[in-house]
Length: 499
Image (cartoon, rainbow, N blue to C red; front, top):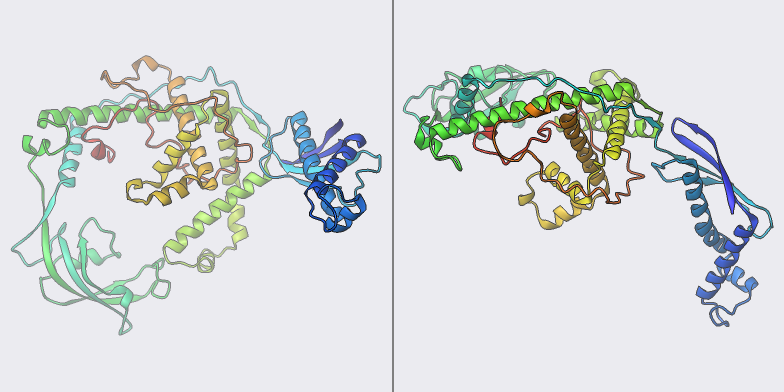
C-alpha cells in the first residue's frame, strides 16, 4: 500500500509527503508498459508483440513512465488528502518524480503541494436570538407610494409657453467649444434632457432653465476634475444651446380609472390596500434581513477561520479589477487613475488587504453554515440564480444563455450568491426572537419556491475562490431577498421598492 504525512500547512498551502510501496510502483509501471505496447503501431510487429526494448525506443521510456505516473500518483495523492482530512481548493503540484525508477525495488516517495480549504471553527449558533424591529406603516408612506405610481405613469406633453421651466423635457442642439475650438464630445443634436432627473454637468441645469425656445444662447461651464474625458477634465467650456422643443410633465388623476390601469387592481381602495400590504410585507422582510445580518455578525465574531493566502490574493485581484473597471467605464485609463490617486497598484492592494481577508472569512463561514444546515443549492438553483444575475434573459439569444449557464466562473459566482441568500434567509427565520409575529397579516404562503435537493453532489471542492464581488456593504448580503416571507408581487411593488 503506502503512507503519507502532512509536513506543513503555511498560509493555507499544504505540503504532504506521500509514499507508495515498491510493489505497487512496479505494478503501475508494468501495467503502463503493457498498455503502451498494446496501443503502439510499431512497423514490423503486430500490436502487443514488440519486445520491450523496441517499444521503449519507439515511444520513449519517458512516455511509459508518464503513463505509469498518471495512474499512480493522483490516486496516492487523493488518498493522502483523505487521510489528512484536507479539502483542496486548487490543483496540486508534485515534486520528487524526476529520474525515478519505478522498477528499482524502492518505495516511491514524492511531495505534493496544494492549497487547501482553511480550517473553520464555527461557533454554536443554535441559541442566537435577535429582537426584530417593528414598523407600523403610516398613511403618509402609502400616499408617497401612490404618488410615485402617478410619477411612473406621467406623460410629457407639448406646452404653449416658450421658456424652459424646472422639470421640463427639452430637446436641445448643443455646440461645445473649449478655448475657441469646437469640442465634438460636448456637442449634440436633438439631445433630450429631463430637467431635475437626468444627471447633467454641474451647474448646467440651472443655466438651461429660463432659456427661450429657438434662441441660441451661450452658457459657460466648468468641467469637473473627474470628467470622463481626461483631456477636458478641469477645463472651462462654452456651450451654445438651442432649445428645439419643450414638454411638461402631466400626472394622471389619482382615482378609480387610474387604479384599474394597474394589473389586477379593481379600484382606488383596492390599490391603497395592496400598496399598504406590500409596505408591511417589505418592512417585515427588511426587519428579518436585519435579524439575519445581526446573527451572521455574531457567528463571524465567535468563529475562527484559518489563513488562506490564495483566497485572499484572488479576492484582492477581484477588488482591484473592480476598481479598474469602474475607472475605465468613466473613461479614465488605469495608469491615469493611479496617477490621480498618487498610488501604485501594490499600495492599493495593501489598502484593500484587510477588506479582502474579512470578505474571504465571511464567505467561508457562510458556506460552512450552509453545509451544516443542508442549504447548499442544487445545480438548478445555481442556474436560476445566474439567470437572475444577468437579467433581461428574454432579450438574449438562446445560444448566449446556454454559454452563460455553462461558464464555470459565472456558475461559481452564482453558487456563492445562492449560498449567501439561502443562509441569510435561514438565519432570518431561525434567529428571530419572536417568529410567531413574523407575518404580514395575509393568508398567502410565505415560502420561496426553491427545490432544495440536498442530496445533490455539487463537486465544489475546488470552487472556493468566490467570484462574486463585495462592495463596502457586501452587495450580495441578501438585499432584495425577503428572509423567507416572499409571495407573488402585487401592484405597488415597484413603487414600494423606492421607499
